[in-house]
Length: 607
Image (cartoon, rainbow, N blue to C red):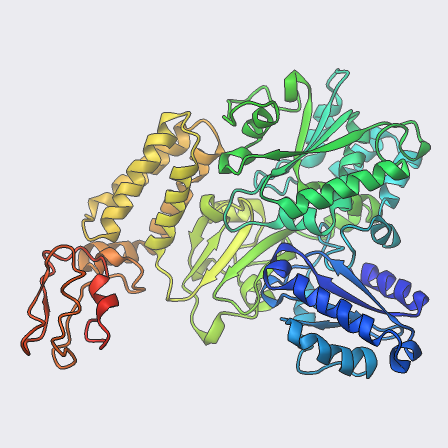
């Protein structure tokens, strides 16, 4: 990462101009990045003829993709020749003029808007491979990627290495698939290379249905060329003839930038026939899939590409043997493909210098929750969950206490503070009861309710199941019904044992990974937070006040002015009094917890 930044800074120094870049990732755009970009355009144009700007060598403006710190968007970088980069955070259009006057024209960074020291410290602690160029290159400018060493790994492979040597290097690196399964990438390549077929497919799984994960999207948006370079290297290694980038149709920014990158490569002669004049031919196209969670399952994804309904199917045969239209197909997610060029560039030993022996390297995580910093962070696999919170995320907000860690998204698991020393590799998380899944991580304080988190995840999986197999289709609904009973005051202690039994049965009998992993949320929730489940059942109390079914509405007689405003919206007639100077009274036997009375009271007399 440091080498990339140094090379980028060197390039700008050679140009002798000040460079401004604006983050136009999805999160940057959502926070007003395009408005900030246009304001910089306006300010640069207005000041282009001024003596101050001409004296400083002029100023260029560009866009960059995601660097990970989404909570700080809109992020703006200012590169002054011969000086360190200065990052400005949470930039608004109205802040642009001050940055222009203070820094670009005046030569002094604007201290009020510039990122603080701890931001840089946290950023520099990360180990970056797939996100090595995050925030450093224009995703729509192939020359930017070339200037930071892009496609040199491809050139090295095509001109100096045999296909088997490439596979051996990936095997030596210990790279494991970063989509959740953790299969050894090199072994998969080797098996696909051995298949005797005139046609072989290289496929990117860029479908992220997990509501908390967006690493693949950010990589494809922020540096599409790195994903594509990894694909072409993989195709050369296994004898691939056709490449397909499968992504969601609602990833419109990624789709646009991927297609532009492919078009630019074809124009240079680096994609299609006779790549780089080496005689190797391979082409890629983008396939926009449906926005369905099950579409990310490998066999369902391949069925979708073939124009069929995305139904999972039993394996073997595996896709490397019989995949798209019966041909050998090598499928990895976007992050895995983007990591390959860095392994070829720096060598397998560099990659194995990180992480434990059974999971070398690094992994990107989508971070959220009650923490100071959130976004995407690429971390050494030796990193513990506690280190993520304290060293990379700045700790729990407002010095509150950690309650629960949600690892792996809707098919991952819930872990307590006793798991802070658990490492983020596949086996360590599995031993703790969770799964890496699509590598989302959220840390919550006491304001979170475990039952609420479990209900959300099970409800999501219930909605997203393809319905093909009975255990998943019916089982998810039965689990959700029991969780609803617990959250609404109808739960019984025997429901906990019943939930565990049903979850184990669904895991064993389901057809695909969705049914096998979705029950983890329930199992880890009961394993680490059984007392909270029991408090909901026995005491009928949700300490986090998230389960509205356990709400008890009380009228504070001293504050009630008997206006009657709460009576009319009550759908069950549970409220009496409230007129003729008598305070209102709520009959909880009739109350359905609709919250209408609370919303109607303008005197805060109902609590």
